[in-house]
Length: 304
Length: 154
Image 1 (spheres, one colour):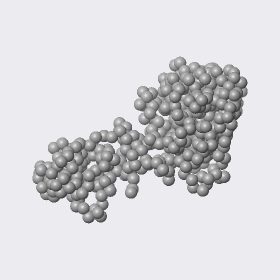
Image 2: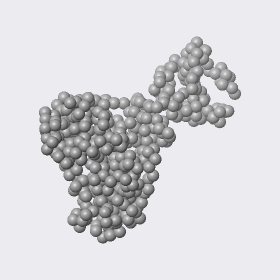
Image 3: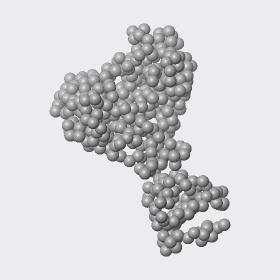
Image 4: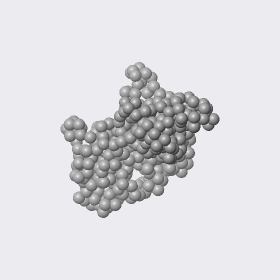
């Protein structure tokens, strides 16, 4: 894999994806072998939005490779509060670190920031745009649990604003997955994502009801429908309620269905699923560390 | 009325004649070129003239102005059939059709208010020309209709 920056799942070829996933599998099998691989390496974390798992798993990944992190901290305590541009912030911080991880509330922020720095920059979520490292750990989890051959996946919830969905849907075109999109009409895939899927020759099959397609699925990828996407509470409750699953909902599913979620969940996956073989979301979250270790190792290799 | 007769109506000495503009788009063309008449140079506009090729076409003649590549690029998006005649000393010295560019920079504003290119950052807006519109290089938003409405104000 040879990329200077990781901005979008769209830039990743099947070969790139396989390279990261294979490397992640090697690391997961023997993490201690990589414990000193990037001693003296500093990863700069710039999180302009709250994040728990992405930030912690990048931190864990860098430390498990023997390196350390420098963290901008919260926006409230930073120079951004004084009106500094993002371009200036990243140009300053690249002097402090060997690679940067950026999360920012605006679409295109990572792409723009990458134009101003020479060190590798990884997009950890840009508004409703892309979240490519989440996609890589999702793909790793899918490959481990269901495999890529003749994969049928249902992606459900907020498909309009959910950046993990946009990244994942595009990446899945690389493995020719059969993709089904399940959402209320108001939260269907945005035009730009449809355009990309169409360009890649993928068929967009949309459903408003999970029952229509559930028995065919190898993987069900659930995302949260957020309250703020709806004008009022009652409309939100009415819609969100239709996209919650529990063991009863899954009665029609195949026994080997893999249920995933980028987390955090609120109530879209009932806790009674947690103890079933379907539940793969905690494993998915844990996979963030070896996958991000693999990605950082491959990105930093060019500098070694 | 032939083009030739048209040119005689208001011949310009030095400048640009843009012919075969899609009917009704002349004022948008002037907007793209930042021409509002305040410079004092003569500007003539003919709109919805009969045209064999287009049915109806607009013509714009601008004294004292030769177009930049950027201006030609955006022009090509709203008036794909336009031809550009550079006039020096009353003679057409150069005649060219516009060509569809692969990218337009710094001329259109992204309609996505949450796009980083709309913020106070040191970058110009950048749109890739796709099959049936243009697409923001930063946030991927696609503009299909009404491109002139997205032209950046000076």
